[in-house]
Image (cartoon, rainbow, N blue to C red; front, side, top):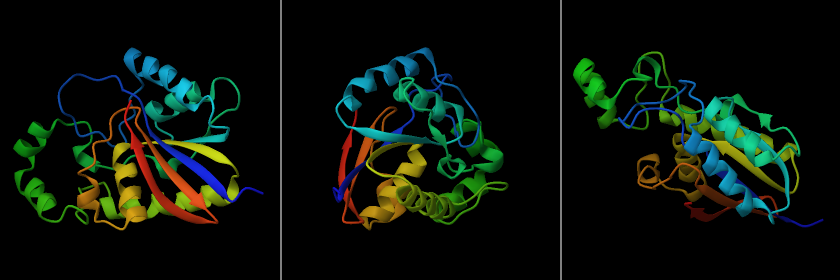
Length: 198
């Protein structure tokens, strides 16, 4: 049996919302027309990757991306633990609105980015913990090369854990809609690889 596996962690393609900068966590937004086209374009990238299964967050923008990548071959396996960080009462607000409505809380989160919990939500550290637990569960229950469709916050949290850097450092990565992070599992060891932006 081949001891090397490729795990392709994909950020969902472009969702349907305005051009303003929103704080989007669990808010369930579908893909835009452009996002569906992005996902179709990704199919060619994965055509020779010998994908055995596809996993996805339970949020529409992720599982709609995953369904397109599955290309009617096999239904994506939905995993709610791969959903985006829960932003609580900030979810769906623009960042300008958050700064206006919750100036002190916004300041406190900036001072303790990894651990601060927005009312009704979770910290990025908590998000990292659940996502990494689910990642290893998924690796144990699957074989061969797989795709995981998830969200920018989750991907950065994973990168922090895999690469041994702080979550704040991982948030310095540019992770575009439809970008791919390739993780290599070699003899059961999860190794760093490369980000592809399309």
